[in-house]
Amino acid sequence: MIPYQFIAIEGTIGAGKTSLATRISQDFNAKLILEQFEDNAFLPKFYEDQDKYAFPLEMSFMASRFQQLKDQLGTHDLFRNFIISDYYVAKSLIFARKTLQPDEFNLFNRFFQLIDISLPKPDLLVYLYLHVDKLQENIRKRGRSYEQHIKDEYLDQIQSGYFEFIRQQPEMRILLLDTNHLDFVSNNDDYQTVINVISREYPFGVHRITF
Image 1 (tube, one colour):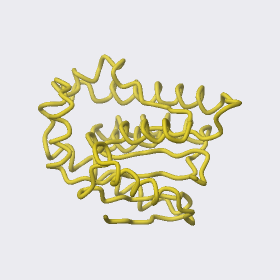
Image 2 (cartoon, helix red, strand yellow; image 1 turned 90 degrees about the vertical axis):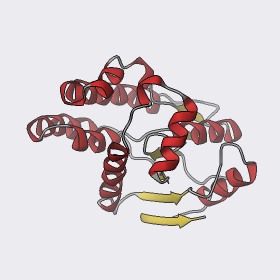
Image 3 (cartoon, rainbow, N blue to C red; image 1 turned 60 degrees about the horizontal axis):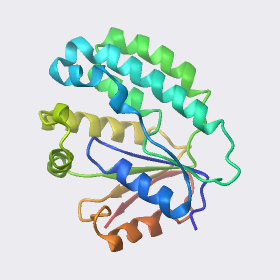
């Protein structure tokens, strides 16, 4: 039994967020919220020219994430009282801080603060930590063409952005899972190991677990 009503799974590109959230939703009859990144026309362009497309990309992602979470979290489901998402809205701020110029980020942050206060925080935020080489391996395996040229440096920057954010959230329950030695997608025992950890009750703060 998982003692939380709303869990958000986070991690850098290729960490396994969607795979884990989807499996948990199936096993625990949870309402599943998946990020609609494939509908964002700026994403392939961003990987070709980050300086030109970073601002419209981050603004469009923030708008779509806000609208989706507002709609999904505000709709009561008679048959499901457990919600799991493969992202937390703060990822908009984390990515923007690493991709935007200072003046662009200042404008972006003003909009973000307005929407952030109107959305509930997850009861538990789970961060999946993987080394960059493993992230790149997962990116290659899933084969999205526009992701194949992502640089290690970019993944490192995003990961450091998450760590910076996590350190500044004393009023959230955050589970930082080092999954470098797990394969929760293909190995059921590894998946159950993750479930056992998520099923514990935690006080506010960051809880680091290495397997």
